[in-house]
Image 1 (cartoon, rainbow, N blue to C red):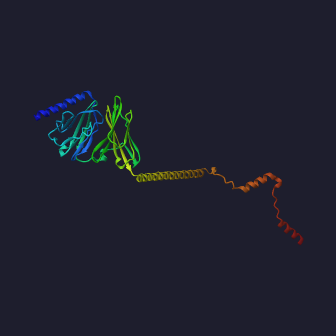
Image 2 (image 1 turned 30 degrees about the horizontal axis):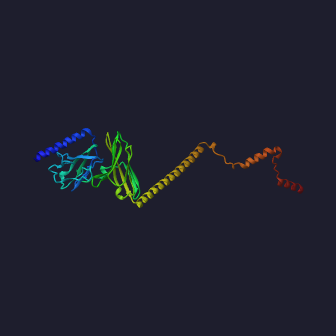
Image 3 (image 1 turned 120 degrees about the vertical axis):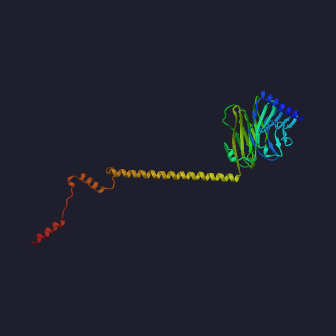
Length: 344
């Protein structure tokens, strides 16, 4: 009887999956990572509203689903997870589960599939690992932002993508626990854009162009960390990551002071370099001039004060003519000659 009941459950799950996959678009959330620990929670929260018809959890190492939930028929679990798995059902579209009495055999890839009406199927993959994520290796931010506590900041989800975007989600990554929390989703529907917010921290705006902005006011230290924007397109899922660093007002002022010091030092250095360059150019110019004069003495500049007296004498002689020629008389010789005549 038990075997027949389990076969009925597997057949029911298979048939409902086929029915929903025929007439609906399957949307997939980005993969998340969870650390193996007692009471660990595997998130599977559908981002849109509607009617939940079935939740199915599978694991790659198992041939059959490990947990199934149906609003009408209840729950069913694989023998290795019976009594250890619990559906949380915090909201009408929540398919998350918690696992207790964990062992290392619980490590691996888990796949969650939510069947909803009228939107269709929504899936998410979760990897359970034993050690924590190394942030410096696994996450490389595309954008880095620095903000002071108690200030306001806007995180923009923008990406140059190929294809048509039908859903954008923004999530906060918990790198220490290896998990993530969806803040909000923006989904394109036939009658417009639908915004679903799952976190009261911050305010999200979603435009008709599928541009999502997260506005954080009165920022606290816990707001720092990694934020990821996921774009679901017909060409696949593309993501961008933002690293937000929060500093106290005092630390931010110190950072600005150091920035001013570096800028001032750079300007002084440039000014000194320009002065040295101009001095060197003038010195080289003088050396070239001196070398040119040595090679061509005829081009040496005359001193206006050299030969000045000679020029004046030549000028006077030219104006006076022959009558102004100087006459030299030796009066002492004439006087001496007269004295000799008188003695005779």
